[in-house]
Length: 121
Image 1 (cartoon, rainbow, N blue to C red):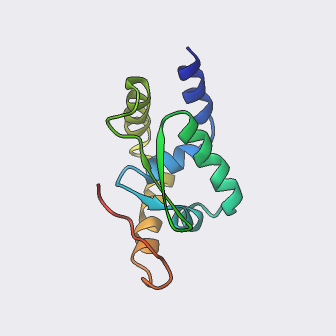
Image 2: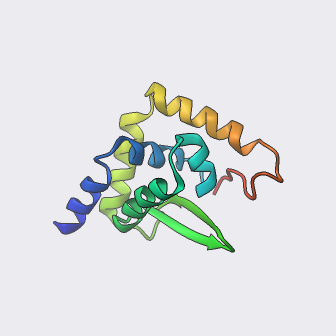
Image 3: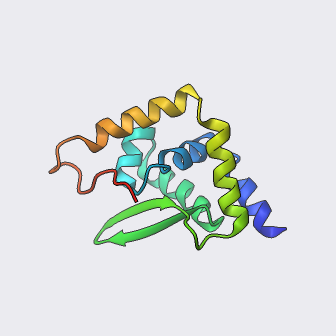
């Protein structure tokens, strides 16, 4: 039951739902999420950490950069189902569509400005 509570707590915030939806296409650098969501890096870090603790998001570090992606096959069945449910429930939301368009623009920007791009897994 504790796993379910952690997942529901992680998903009880609009910004965290937007993060989950932004990661559906693949791995994204924290700096890109900052640009898309317009949040301070420290705030965004707290949000992705809650998602990570709930098993919904995975992180890898490369140098000083942090990259996030949705939890994969190694995630619990409950976490994978929660990700599927959120994706289905929010797929037609205007705010989500706007975030994805902004993410495409951010990732297509100057490669010297961004160290990584939105990549498909």
